[in-house]
Image (cartoon, rainbow, N blue to C red; front, side, top):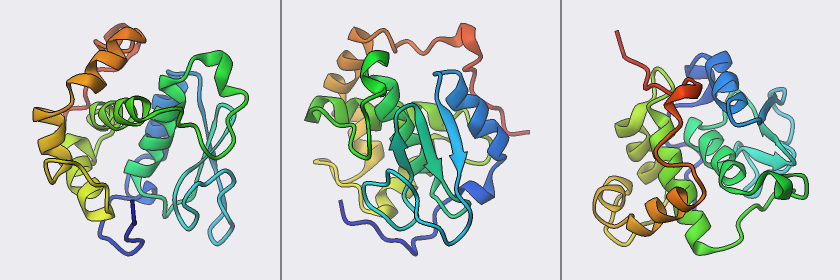
Length: 170
């Protein structure tokens, strides 16, 4: 993936950060904010991309929301006992990466001002690549293996009982 750091995407500063913090907390993850201009610890891609160390997801105000969700979802799809060893790179396999992308798109609807459609558009603008040419096409037509992976890990259907209802845009 070659990302476009200046792409017009929704960034952490554009949403209610506390809502993102609460969403990650539902999965026993901690959002740690990094001051503007400082390097993001555990960032695989550098620049403004979110980072991972253990069960913490690091981000700045200029971090794209899709990046925050993507990195958080890497940790969510891991077995909790593996999280402690994660530093920067959490991917074990292509199926895990696919499951991460799928879950990231599902969770996008849990953030007001973001949502599934915008997450797909932002992923495309940022440079994610999918066989069918777009995040939405992949999600709707080619992601059976990702759904199967998430179901096998007990992550689908999403656990509505713990507060994961989609945010309604009023």
